[in-house]
Length: 149
Image (cartoon, rainbow, N blue to C red; front, side, top):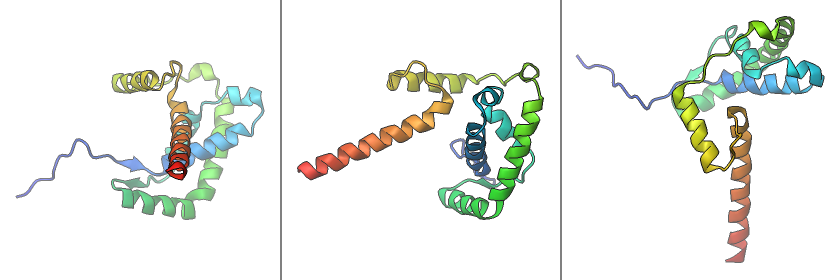
């Protein structure tokens, strides 16, 4: 009998996480500054994701398929669930919410990024924007060098 391959490098991703985080950020950014300070994006997202059917993928093709399916079939539900989550979180005092501790691996990875990028105050929430900005700079540099040659 053949057993399943144990691939410790294999990943599983719930494609709804990205959509929910983006929607939570969008809705929270539209709130008054005072209300924004009371909310934690990942808490809103976790609340929503716990109420939705997950959409996992293990390959790039699967991720693309699931993402398109999620955009097509779940966008309205995501918006509604985020709205409900924000209302619920606004009623829950932040003192009653204690975050999970960061894992050692995550802390080490973030410290490596801080050192490599010379950004000593970098947070995980800032990483995607920073990577996008660095990619745009790289594309600009590549484009300008290709015109010179």
